[in-house]
Amino acid sequence: MITGKNYIGNVLSSLGNITYKTFNPQTNLENEIIYTEASTIEIQAAVELATEAFKTFKIVSGDKKNNFLNEIANEIEALGDELIKMYCSESGLPEGRAIGERSRTIFQLRSFANLVKEGSWVEATIDTAQPNREPIPKVDIRKMLIPLGPVVVFGASNFPLAYSTAGGDTAAAFAAGCPVIVKSHPMHAGTGELVASAIINAALKTGMPNGVFSNLNSSGIEVGQILVKHPEVKAVGFTGSIRGGRALYDIAAQRDEPIPVFAEMGSVNPVVLLPKATKNKRNEWAKTYADSITLGSGQFCTNPGLILGIKSDELANFIYILSEEIVKIEPSCMLHPNIIGAYESNKANMQNQKGLETTANVSKDVSANYGRQMITTVEGATFLENTVLHQEVFGPFSMIVQCESIEQLELIISKLEGQLTGTILAEDNEIRNYQNIVSALQNRVGRIIFNGVPTGVEVCPAMVHGGPYPASTDSRFTAVGINSIKRWVRPFSFQNWPNELLPDELKNENPLKISRLVDGVQTF
Image 1: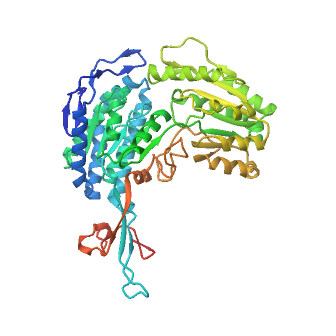
Image 2: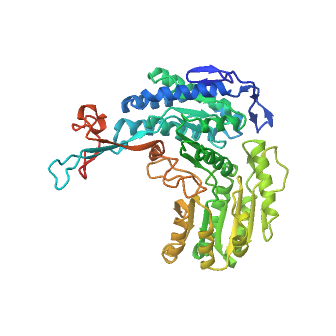
Image 3: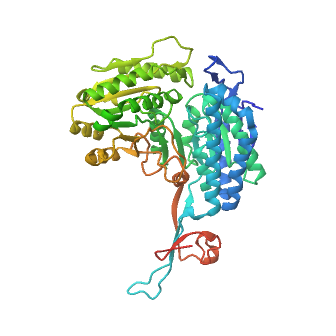
């Protein structure tokens, strides 16, 4: 049952005086439940509980964390149709999307559960003492990864489950040994409370310390700002806009003790259409990309918002076919009136830019909050001169840049801001002749795709979901997959420490039987 209250540890609380409701974009009406924004007293209490919980949670065994993470997954599954109905009523997204995202969320939790049970993720490294070494004896040094402390996670508007309350950031932080305080997204507060109840139930069933998790409601930015400024908060996870992520990053940097903000932000995900592919498969790629651009009403961080090609009759035909195909697709519901309002405003801003031509624009009447797709095109020189054209339009929108030459194409790629993905569409062996293009694209993205679409992020150890700024605030890390745990830890060394007092991961006898690097040799 939804209460509209905050979880301060395992206690429901509503001391604040600011209330709000979520919105159903399909019906274009507010939902009935009233949510109470967390007060400063409740924020302080949540952080104090998390700080106290960290003292014990940071040394909880991998087996116990495995039980905790698996039990969260079990509790989410047990929510059944109630969760799916709430998700749909707050997002406007279809039931199939909700079910798929729930499955992904559960998979992420179980993946981290398996990771911590096995235990080698701590990267235990042992350099044993050499007391007889000349001219200076060598001391015993042992290193492993340890958790940072309480983590604040901001729910994402476009993924109410997989990037929100029990999403990848939270699962990774729990796996690392960090308590989590979620700043629930106001667009899906009910979904957030249901998932929060699952986490709390799992924590109680598996004996986790009170304060290992809290869920705070917020209708605006104040709760998030207070959390990021709090001296006991040690790291932040965020998925959203460049403006929002950068604001949090700046707040964290200005603290007396700056902390990391791992923000996944904007991306136009450039697609390079090479000449032979343009000539031989323009019809196929046009149809494929019409589907990709409109998938989920374009509300994915990997939406292909920019297509780059060499000016030719074949590219002109590709633009024509793409424009014809995309208007055949029925518009779909966007997440919220604010989201579609920003989309329409950003489209209008693009259309006002000198030299931009609109080649496809759905103009028919649609239901409220449904996003009309648009395709535009521009000359390469104009794109280079006007950086406004480089900005993301969040929604079913894409721009095709017609480059004068391969050299101009390479220059344009090199001038792009950092991106999550880059894609190259090429015929067999064609790509071998464009290694400079590949290299330029590699310098600007976190993941490069060959003959595919960027939409769809596989959750696996090899996935990198991040990239140079502003795709993310630190391109050395991924926000997806088990390696995302490395955002919430730091390396720590013990020097000449008594064996019996070392963590099990570093003891001579290796009681956990994990993989370790001992005197330069990987042992098992």
